[in-house]
Image 1 (spheres, rainbow, N blue to C red):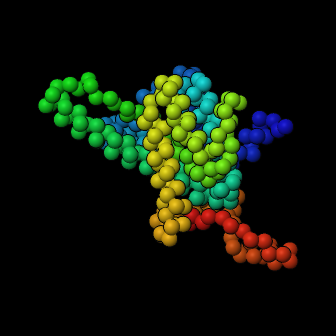
Image 2: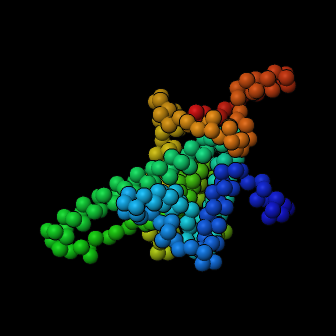
Image 3: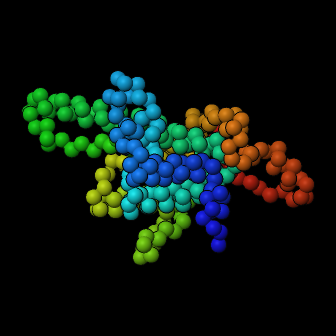
Length: 262
């Protein structure tokens, strides 16, 4: 059994960086080093005071140390690692692009969601005067949504894998996001962060897998391959030339199938 240090060192680069950032953000908060209000996503602060860091920092705060925090961090370390080491093995740029696309999609969906509710609030408040009757699910932190996006993509890539819930119930991975969402709602967590993560994950999976498999064009090609290669993030990508050389040198041709995203 490897030590915690060896386990951490063996983590793939993107998940290692994201998981570390989430842990550090919570640890610093618990130590009283900062207030979450300074990293929360308040669009008024972004657009009127140009505090653009809020567009990024809100994705790293999973809340204070708690059972929910531990579960979210374990989701990152389990499902994120399996994605980056499995489906996205030697495709660090593609995995990083998935995270960036997910974050961007969540920001856009948050703006649309807020605009929709503000319109409803305006109409009801000025016409019926029952502002307090509007359920307002907006959240200033979307780290949970980004984690849920990872879980959803993992569930689509490994749909038949068995997942155990507290050692009591086992189910196929395909149903994991929906069961987790249901449990969160039952235990009092808001539904929108989980649901937005599922929507972002499905959008990515549809554009990069389902649509191309149906004969459509991949409109979400990874544009950061050169940048990742220049910074030497992760192992070098697989090239078809190297595959052919390895197969020819062994004297046996072994079919390889992997999804190209760029």
